[in-house]
Amino acid sequence: MNFVPVFAALAFLAIAAWPAAAQPANPPHHAALRGAPQPLSDADKQFLAFAAEDNQAEIQLCLLAEKRAVDPALKAFARLMVNDHVAIESRLAALANDVQAQLPDGVGDEGERTRAELKGLAGDQFDRKFLAAQIEDHSKDIEKFSQAADRGSEGASRFASETLPILRQHLALARAVQTQLKAAE
Image (cartoon, rainbow, N blue to C red):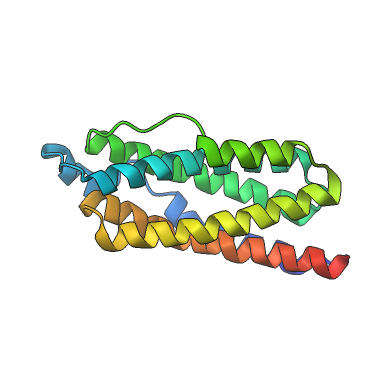
C-alpha cells in the first residue's frame, strides 16, 4: 500500500495550518471584547455549547484512533486532529471567558454514542467506521459553523469563521484517507 500521497498531504496541511495553530490563545481581537462583554443570544449560547462538546468529542475519538487504528495514515490523521482540536479548544475557552459564557464539560450524547460504537470495533473495521464518523461529523460541523459565521455575534462569528478552514481541511483529509483505504482493499 502506498502511503506517500496521504502522508504528503498530511505534512503539507500540518505545515500550512501551523501559522494558525501558532496564534496566541488570546489574539488581539479578543482584548477588545474584554472591556464590555457582548450579551450572547440563545443561538450563540447553543452554538458555543455545541462547539465545546463536539470539539471535546473530536479530541477523545482521535486519541482512541491513535491507539486502535491499524492504518499508519489514519494514525497520522488522528494525531493532526488532536493537535488542531486542542488549539481550537484553547481559542474557544478564551472566547467563552471574554463573553462570560459557561461551556459544558464532556463530549455530549452524540459523542458518547460514537465513542461507544467505536470502542467495540478493532482493526480495519475500526478504521472504516472512524473515518465514516469523521466525514459525517465534519460535514455537519461545517454547516453549523457556517451558520454561526453568518449569523452569530461578533465573537461567535469570528470564532466560527476562523475555525471553518480547519474543519474543511479535516474533512478533505478524512476523505483522502478513506479513498486510500478503499483503494488498498
